[in-house]
Every structure is written in structure tokens, then in C-alpha cells.
Length: 592
Image (tube, rainbow, N blue to C red):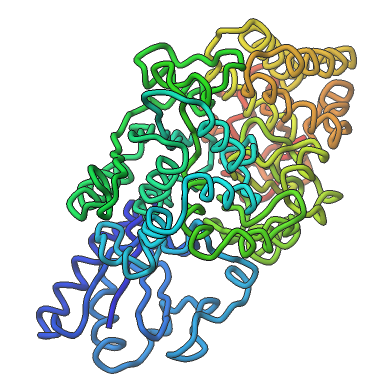
């Protein structure tokens, strides 16, 4: 029997490592260590329910497990064979000991390719990766395929870059292979910077060898002998597991000289980023690795022609690379049979925001937003009404109810005014102010701009100032025209993808929520009640009993009135802290 404990960052913050320690202690005390193993794995996907413990081979999932639950799991399930009902994740309950978990709700429409091993193996044990066809694809390439045949397979698969741009991966490899040089490089872009995104981090934490194997395959295909992983320093667990994986691969002869008895040489080193969002752009990333400022440069030349140290360089992100071994093992036709005509395979999304099943999912291209949000995601929290979903991170757009039946792929999302991006998906409900949402994402972009080009450096700052003006109740209808016009100029004139896509939140919210903008500038009201400067707190005379609770709670003495008399709020003093609203037991405080 195996007890698989989620060892991803999210669950570790809720003491999953202590859960594993307690399980091991209980098993040792019961003398069961020869029969039962406790294994720390990667992310299972349903982060909302974490920490998660999976009991194998009967596929029982326990959710929101605490360290003190370890004794009962061992006593009841391990020893007596009885499920602990209060911890049971019913949606993932097994049909029988011989089957996979019941495919309903969260998992029903998922196909796990990039995430195939996450939650199923010990990411720090190369033998477990090898047992699940690990490094078989590399062996196949070195013994049965020429570099050109490998490139052709990736082209035929239809795989497009999962880092946001969606450029055909096989074509990128072909260009790098075609350019002759004494040295070439393979770069893994693990600089995942979108707010709310944790796709690449989860793959690296749960299945690091899949990325190493893919980089070696790419090196063989394009004629490169060196690989570099550019990863943000804020990912300590992913870094630790990558280091372990690289060391193990070298020990097994899967990295280094004469790999698998062939003449092929390939090794991998790590490079660390300091969390700059712009370094997710491949030219800025390369400059950062070279010790220069992380700023993008005009293309051409593309990195495949002149990249790291001026040499031909192929850059793919983590998720793109994680799919490569499966394509080689199962064939390009198999991968191409999944997805849509122009977007093949699957896409990993990090579901976040006002949604019941916050977590990591992988669905076929062509799955609709409605299926993702209401079936896999379990709908909106607390029975609230769906309002919008932000796809593509801070550079994406906010899509509405009319977009729910759009089939998710690269082209459809762009046509709808958003983008695929790296896979962040933030869901919003009726309580969210879309003007404030646009301001939030623009604030992030302003902070992360490298400052090299003036449209992004200055233009986005002016956009943010206009939004700040509007949310404070000082905007005019003319400001809305300025917002749109300035956004279009920034989109057309910025140097790199960050600047070119930065106005998307503004443009999409203007297109889909113009009524909210109008309410802010004409009525001086925030329909969602989120813009503090537009709030007005007042006392309802018929409900106020003069208990003085609100006055005593007010930190600036803005409320006056004698005991058992109707109180009054001085609008000039009120700081909209909400203390009076929270303290009033008679619903006598009104927020307009």
C-alpha cells in the first residue's frame, strides 16, 4: 500500500510535510513499514481541497487533511480497510480498487499530458519516472530517429508554445536546427510571472524529469549540447527538485557525455531570475541570463538565429517541454487528434478567484469556458452570479457570460478580446468592480514594465492615472475616450508583447462593461460597491436605536448622536473603513 501525500508548495504551506511525517511515525509504531510506504508527490490538482492524501491501490482521496488526522487514517484505512468518511473527497471516490477515480466533476473532462505524472510519482526518485516510460522517448530518438525526424514529429503534432505566444514548436525547432553554429543552446523558460498562475511551478515540483528529458530531445533535434533552465528564485521547492533531478540524470548517464551509449552529449545548468515579469519574454530572459538588464530587443534576429551569447538558441516554456516525451512515445497523430483544428493537444490552467474548485487543471483545446468554470470549477463561490473571467494573466482580457460557450484555443480567445497567455484563469463574481479590476492589472503592468520603450513606460502610467481618477469619482465621459484611444496607441507602438498586450484589460472591460464605467463618471457610483472613494455611509433613521455601537467603532469620530437618538455620519470626516457597518446589529447603516 502507498500513501501519496501532496508535496507541492500550496499543500506544504498547510503542513503536508508534517502530515507525511506523522503518517510514517504511525506506520513505524504499528510495524507496517515493510507493507506501507508514504510518498511525497507533486500537485494532485484540486488545491481548494488540500492538503490531499491519496491511498493506493484503491484510489481513495482524503481532502483537507491535518497532521492530527494521520493516526486515524492509519488505524482505520490502513489497518482496518475502512474509509475515514469525514475526510473523504467524495467527488474523487474510487469506483473500485481496480479503477481510476470516478470521472465526475473536477476530473471528468480533463486529459493529463503535461501533468501526467504529477501526484502519481515521487518527483525526487528517478526510478519512479523511468517506471512510467520516463526517458523512453529520449532513447527512441537516439536509437531510432534522426534529428530531422524528431523535428518533423513535433511539427506534425501541431504543438504550439504554451508560454503565451502560441508559436508552432516544431517550426521553432526547425529554424534552430537549420542555423549552423559551433554551439547551440536549449533554454527552458520557467519564469512564470502571471498573478495567480502556478502551472509551470507545479510541473517542475511534481515531474521535473519530464522537462529534463524534453530538453535533451530538443538538444538532439537542433544540434545543441547545452541546456539552461531560467527559473525565478521565488520557486525554492521547484529549484531543489530540479537540482535533484539533474544530479540523478547525470548519475544514470541520461545527461552528460555519450548519453545511452550514443555519441550525443548534453548537459543542463540552472539560471535564476529575480522575479521580473518582463523576463518571461524570451529576448529579455536571454539578456538576464547573460548578466545584462532584462529588457526585450527587436526581432529579428530571433533567438533561434542569435540568442544566448549570440548563438542559436531554442526557448520553450515548461508546459511545452513537458508534452514532448509523450508526443515522441505515442506519436504526433495521437497528440494531433486532441484539441481543435489550429490548437492541438491540451492546455493547463490555474483556476483561481471566486470559484469553488480552485486548482490546477488540464483540458483538451476546444473545451468551453462554461465547462471549465461550472463543471470542472464547480461554479461560483457562495452561490454568487458569474460576472467575468480573466484569461491570459495581466495581459489578457475579461470575458463575460456571452463568451462562456467559446471553445478555448489560441485564436478564439484573441478574437474575443483576450488571449491564452500561459494559462492563468481568474474568475470574478457580481461583487467585483470591473473598473477596479482593470486598474489592478494595469498597476501590475506599470510596476513590471522594463521602461525601455516610452509607449509602455509612459503610456501605461497615464492609463493607470486615468483609471485612478475615475475610481475616485473625478472622471468624465471624455476620459473614457482617452482610455480607449491611448490603449490602442500603446498596443500598436510598444516594443514587446508585454506592452502590446498590456491595454487588454482596459479595452476588454470597456467593451464588455461600459455601463460600469459610465456609472463611475456620470453617477459617481460604483455599482459593485468596491471603489471606496465613491462609497457613502449614512444612517437609516427608522432603524437606528441610538445604541452608539457605530460611534464607538469609528476611528475618526465621524459619527455623532446621543444615546437612544438617531446618529449622523459626517461625510467630510468619514474614511469609509466599514467599521460602523460591521458593528451595527440593527442594519441601520446604509452603503450607497
